[in-house]
Structures are given as C-alpha cells and as structure tokens.
Length: 334
Ligand SMILES: Nc1ncnc2c1ncn2[C@@H]1O[C@H](COP(=O)(O)OP(=O)(O)OP(=O)(O)O)[C@@H](O)[C@H]1O
Image (cartoon, rainbow, N blue to C red; front, side, top):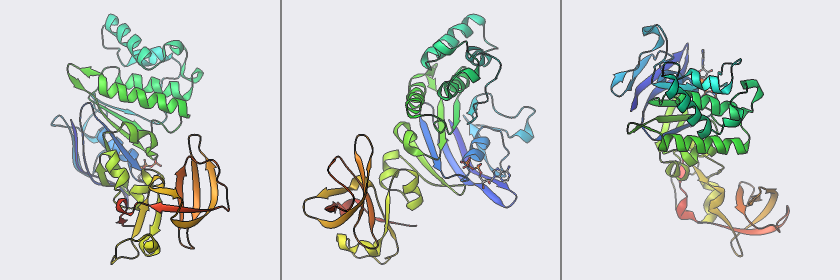
C-alpha cells in the first residue's frame, strides 16, 4: 500500500500541494480530479519520488519513498508514472519499448510477458512499428504496457484519457480496469492512481474519487457518493454536469426554510423531469446527444436549468412543465 501523509510542496509563493494525505491500495483504482493548476502533476511527482516534498512523507509498504535530493537516480523501482507525453523511445518498435522494461529478466520470460502484454493491450498487430507510426491510443497503451510490464506495486497515470478519441478512451479505460483488477503478482496486485481534469471516464472505474482544489484534497469518497453529495460547487462541477442556483431563487420549488439564502443548490440534470403539470418553464435550447437530448429551460429571470430527456419533439421557445425531487437536493458552499 502507498501512503501519503500531509504532503506539502511550495514553488516560491505558490502552494502547489497542501497537506494532502491519501492511501493507494493494491488492486484498487483511485481517481483524483482537479482543474488545471490544482496540483495534480506536482502530487504525482511527489508520490513517485520524483520531487522533494517540503513537508510530509510518502511510504510504500511502510518504507519511506525518498525524494530526488536523497538518491542518485530519482524515482522508486516499484512506482511507475505514465506522463501525458508517454515518453516512449522514438526509434525502436512498440515491442522493443515494452521489452526494454523487462531487460533484466531472462529472455524466455521476457518474450512470454511481452507477448502477453501485446495481446492484453491490443498491440499485437502494431508491435513492429515505431511510436510515430501508431495512433495516440496505441502510444498510450504502449506506455501503460511498458509501465506495468514487471508488475509494479504502484501505477500513477497523468491524464490517461485526455488526448484520445472516444473509442480509444473506452479501450484504455477497460484495459486499466482489467489490469488493476485481474493482474496479480503472487496474490498481490498493483495500486493505481489516475489524475484527470475530466472525471467522465475515471468515475466508472475508480473505487475512490478525490477532488483536488488549489493543492488541497477537499473531498474523497466512493464516486457515486461524491457525484451525488459533492462538498461544494467546485466538486460538483468537477464530477459532471450540474445546475447551480442560489437557495433564495429556488423557493418556488417548495424547499424548507434556510438561514443561508445565498448558499447554492447543486442539481444534476437527471434530477429534473419534464412533467405534464409542474413548474412552468420555457425551452431555450435543445442539444442532441445521441442516446438522449439535453434541454436548457428558463424557469424565471434567475433560474436556468439543464435537464435530460428522451423526448424528440421539443424545440426552443416551447412551453413545458418541470418537476424536481426536492428530497435529493441540499445547499452547498460556493
Ligand atoms: N516548476 C514550477 N515552478 C513554479 N510553479 C510551479 C511549477 N510547477 C507547477 N507550478 C505551479 O504549481 C501549481 C500546480 O501545478 P500542477 O502542474 O501540479 O497542476 P496541474 O493540476 O497538474 O495542472 P494541469 O492540469 O494544467 O497540468 C500551479 O499553480 C503551477 O503554476
């Protein structure tokens, strides 16, 4: 298990990582979501032993992970960090890029393991090509195959989905899920941390979701809990589409009295329904999303909401009625 305790990292007057504590458990996936500049890459470098913390520490199975100022070669042999740029060797084949990670193993095992990884990562057909002759998704999968080749204790991934198209994102997501869940080393498995600014893909495979804001880990929990009970509007926005409305503008929905009328209500689009009789609203825009439509409706001068529907007969300007299950909503901090 990788344990980070009260990690803090400063760059001059910027507190890039503030007092972050977390655990990464074998066979489990944690996703950290944060806006640009929230400290994701800095935290990954600290966890990998590639940056020195100003305070706090990282331990792998109880042993302290040393920072670059304490060792000759920065990094830890059992912790792998896959960067956004993949950092593949440009002049050797996909196969050789993966095999390089196994150079200290016997040839027969190396060949067996490389073939296994090529199959698992769906790279067998492109194994003889060099990185610039393969797609972004194939590069990403090569980087992941190389990182997990010798079954490290910890796999850290920086934005593994960001440069990929939808089919490739889904392939990489499923691959990670299978690798972390099913690849075991003598009964113990790899612990995985994914950092991303877009939770869409991470939500579905993560066991734990953390929200990083200005270097602080402001919320952790099961993805479904964070999604439905975000601690503030930032956490809500980081985990999916959300409507935010001031409490005082929401009184017409029959909410109980509150002392803090400026608090925000966070409402997921799927919590709002089109009904035959309900609160009148005017459709402002209709967006076709394939399996459903996203509709923007105006309820009053202060309330515009986005909701989801399968109805295909709606258009801008039309009058509709909406209802909201008020039991599922609560005020949060801005
Ligand atoms: N070498 C550095 N020197 C000074 N400030 C830095 C340095 N590296 C990062 N920072 C600052 O630290 C903060 C966190 O940066 P970091 O790169 O960790 O964020 P991030 O969440 O990974 O961002 P992005 O998603 O844009 O990559 C930012 O304010 C950034 O400007």
